[in-house]
Length: 449
Image (cartoon, rainbow, N blue to C red; front, side):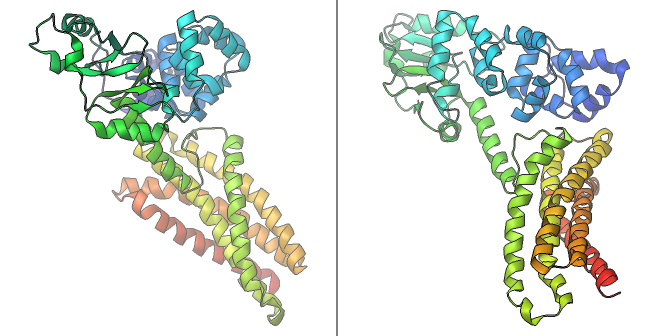
């Protein structure tokens, strides 16, 4: 096995832009672990990503897809024709089918299933009886199994035949003749034991099990805290479904924490950093709309006293909307950029690409929500001037927030300031001050002229 090269994302992304380095880049990508390969591909803009992915061997293509974020692999599927997709699914096993199930067209999924043998089909059918967030769906079938009547020599023979590159294979899982789980045995517990002894006497009674119906996050926490490299996953009748390894468990825990972090900004942890502009616009527009509702509630509270105020005070009523819309738009961009920096997906070669994308998304969302806010303002205050002022101010502030959301964390990273801690503070200050200045400046220009 080739020794894994150090993962230098900046160098890999730079070489993906260079045709002269393409063949050397492909060689280097094939020497990465699947999770690293997926991260490297996700760090590339769509065109470079597809070219590199197509240059990989089929098994490496599948490994990369199963470790990618949902959005990133969907963007690859969308660019493949039916012939390419059919060739790809011919190489998929049950684990890959389960992982890619939602992204595969039904006809291709049916074609892949038709190529499975009877045991693989039963495995797939059993897994699909569990929800997509349950442990039973993702139980790993690459495990060592023995009947509880087996001898120590049988277990030792299994361990000796484990491939050198196999992971977490220091445990044998024991079942009875009906397939019910009886326990697990660590390889270290068999060292120095007489080969003729039954393995049943060496079962680790302290090892916990993971129920198939258990939520994947909960099951992963059990494995992560157990001290074992893998635990058995069993169904409601205690029959062995497979195992959940410490590697998979820690990856699930990481994804769960990332999901919580991304949701604080109304974003999906599966979003592709280099997704098409319209796709990202649609996703972020929803949360801008939710934020708009809360902003209008705050403005309406102030507006309860509008009957006693003169016309210019309408600007004070509407000010929170301008600042809030810029703040949430900037926060979405800021969160994605901070995640990209933390994962080393962002390099100097992609700074301008990401900035142009962020500005384009913000311009579209600014036009959409600025127009809607302007229409509501017209109905509220019956003033075309105020309507135009707030619509234009919202558009300008959302676009400025895109610049701030991209440039602030990149600059802070460069000067060794943690953008996760200070980025939101700087962003809020910029969007608030800019929003108020633009809004009140336009209001003064048109209303008090």
